Length: 279
Image (tube, rainbow, N blue to C red; front, side, top):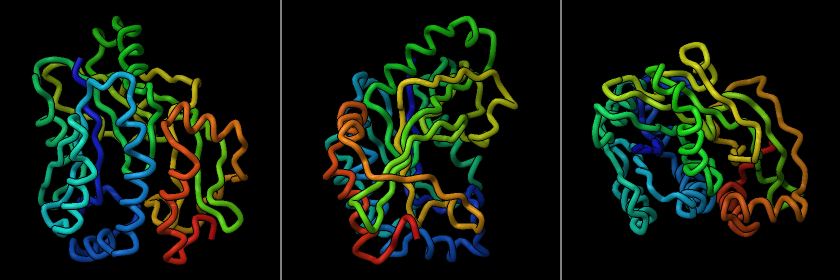
């Protein structure tokens, strides 16, 4: 079954953000601000891509959606980062309503729209465990009867880690167990069905389809930083971060193909620009 991993890289959608902008030009100015882009590239390169490159099952398609207005130097950097990854394809689209454009790009990525597929939502500043694709395929196989009886079926792995940079350590970490967080989340789509995973708010997919939730093992890393869309409004709670243990470092390496140095590099631009994930 084809598996499509869908990633938006600073795409200036109409809607789709928790923070509103009055115009597309204002959204572009926010998304393409130099210090924000430096951090997004660092997180994408050092946190997001290693786990995707190290997947134990490499049979998946990575579709990266960007705006046609992405400045050429940033597009060139993105192309260079993905050049050695045969699964990756960059798709450029004009600004458009969020759900419609994501649905269109996902359906266009399907090799056979009349055959079932698996779709994965993945942000450019998060990481998936190296066996995520393999476990997703096994889950779909184990739930074959459920998939055959429903147009859409959600899959959600709710255990992982949230990480950030701090003033005391290169980075800090906390275990996260949250259903429907939107990281390590996927959907099985029957052949001929045009709806996509991105048609649904990640926290509410269980209102529209049967879902299967897995609590083990840790399947995601979620980056916590000053430019999280979910942290741009007041009243956002702060996780209980702490310095990583040796066991954490070993887990990062074993589960996510990451070293402590890589995680530190992912957050380095935040340090150099005076941004603090905990401030």
